Image (cartoon, rainbow, N blue to C red; front, side, top):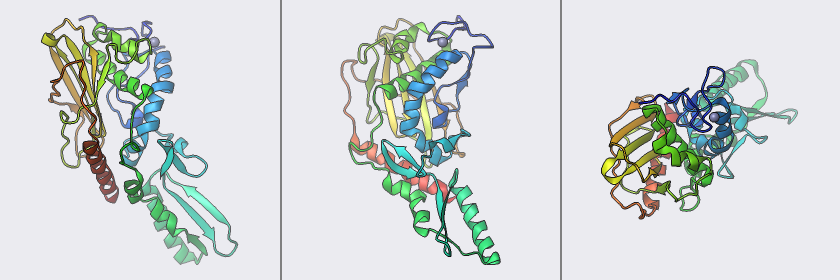
Length: 320
Ligand SMILES: [Zn+2]
């Protein structure tokens, strides 16, 4: 098998000075699988500012509340009001505290990276206040507002209100599958059309097709929160397709090549987002049992159940 030492997007030879570490599932979503043999620095940045940024905007909040996003500059997500925009609405906040001097009425707002940091501050603050007789008050309503329960109650799962997608997000899904395929097999011609798709050189639906699959899905264990990625080639069907499942909620089956003339293969990987489960190769099979021209209807009830499960798990994570 020829080893690719070229950027799969622009074909420039990858050398020390222009190579970059590509996260196959974006780091902003807690992605751990990475490779320095996929993209040159320029292309990595170009995708980073466009399609990766979009998926981070849509789903990055989940990684933050789970604590799976290890980016150091998390704080950038906070706007002036201490709130994160979520699907265009301000539905979730990072922890903040409003402090008020009861004598002067002067208010001060402090923001924190996580709930632990906030709780620690409150504990120390209470101790400090009692011992030194300070007259500062904590705004109790804000404490309630920022709790994980707020997340649970305010991330909507009503049909039409909780959607992930759009052209950039679809391209981000396909990009994950391309990265995973090339990392595993070090060849790109079997996914060349999909590369054209993420570069907008190919219309959606010409060869790269998305299918929502309501039933055929990876089944997470109790308390598991993970991303799952699978790529599969089926010799007798002449197909290469992939499966991506994010946060065990949002899943996609994508035809990457319907003119495949190689041997059958299958690779799958689990990217765990919680400490009780490992990340690594897994043995799963997401079969394709419908025709290429057909598609399966989106199942809102199943989607709501998955989101409810995730919300409950997140609330419980914060109790630990
Ligand atoms: Zn490049």
